[in-house]
Length: 323
Image 1 (tube, rainbow, N blue to C red):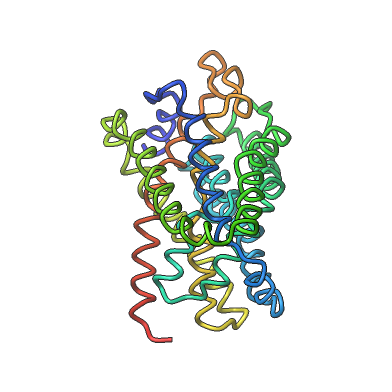
Image 2 (cartoon, one colour):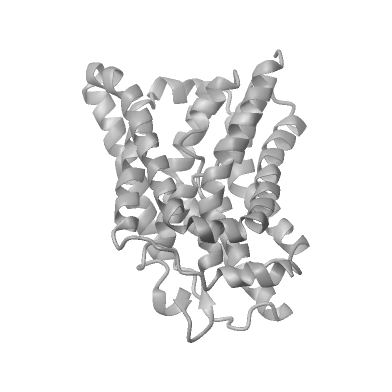
């Protein structure tokens, strides 16, 4: 029953404007530029003087979150479809989310560690994101082909196109933002706060703008996607907290790492899905072959809404607990 419902998601056509992907790319680039305005070399230096926390956090985000996601997919494979599974892998391959720094501050975590993790994971995203999606995606596709879950085993994970897109959307704005902050420090101090809030607000409006025209579709299918994203997101937060605890990091660092690993930049995932150079319609959205990636869109889009709710809830719990 559940698998049939999730399979029906793949062929659902969402009512999205022809320029949605381009607009989302621009908005995401602006958000990254705003994040870069707050990156200070001294902050990064202080974190790397004692690198145990940031190395642990990045290892949990880059290695263990995709691994945990893959193991979760294996455990739930009888209930999941290939496109939903690949959507989970795509989200787990993205860098830290753009609101994690605010949540880390709200939770009274280590804000310097949070900013540093976001900065480093974003800077290396042009390499880490396509590699993780390519590696774990292909591993899953081989498993799905062998188990008979996937009837068409010749899907191609476009490593090169993902690298190029992520570098343009994340890498270039980060470089420009750091250079701007270095060259115009006084202007940066005045605009970085309002700029960040404005860009994040615009992004949320964009995501809601995608949901509203398709609200009836989400209402019909949301219960299955809601439960799946709830479990996956809880595993992400759990990966961050358990890993940081096992490494015996200070509690203030555990809070930030928990949030950083649990808040993924799903906006980047959506931007990639809407990029026809990466997910070519003749391969990934082709009714004739039966390969349609609606399930990936649903998982990634709902993650973008849910992790805000769950992140704020966890931040509120942390905030009430004395360090």
